[in-house]
Image 1 (cartoon, rainbow, N blue to C red):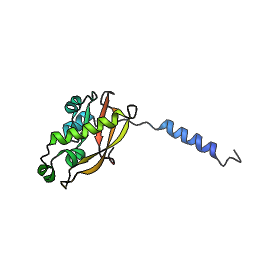
Image 2: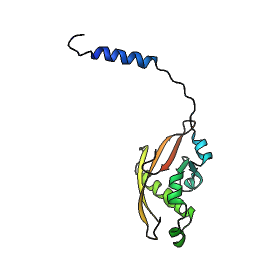
Image 3: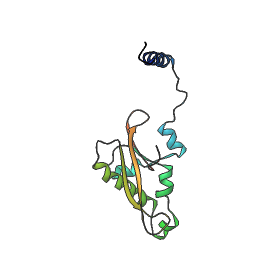
Image 4: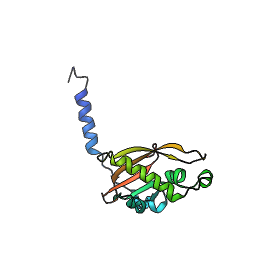
Length: 144
């Protein structure tokens, strides 16, 4: 072992520790529970109207910032359905250009605090649902 600075011993020790560590999953938070709790909002019905066949949800942060009406959006005669439609439409446009990607970022203009629309970025991730089926979640760029 001389001359290898103990690297073989370190690897053997780590392997032995890795073999000994077993953990039991105590609880998993399902997508269904997240929807029931309001952490995610199921928007699959409207997404299907746009031709998106995979279940889609948005995070409560996306809903609060960009779907829920702000005073400026009310002044601009906006509606929650219209704002959600815009998000889903832009998601669909970007997703059609990145069919094989599991994560995409997309932009759209949304009326937030000012009557003048702001350019915002959102992230969509396609991953496994509660039963392994594909599902899409639209979120803020810093969410996961």
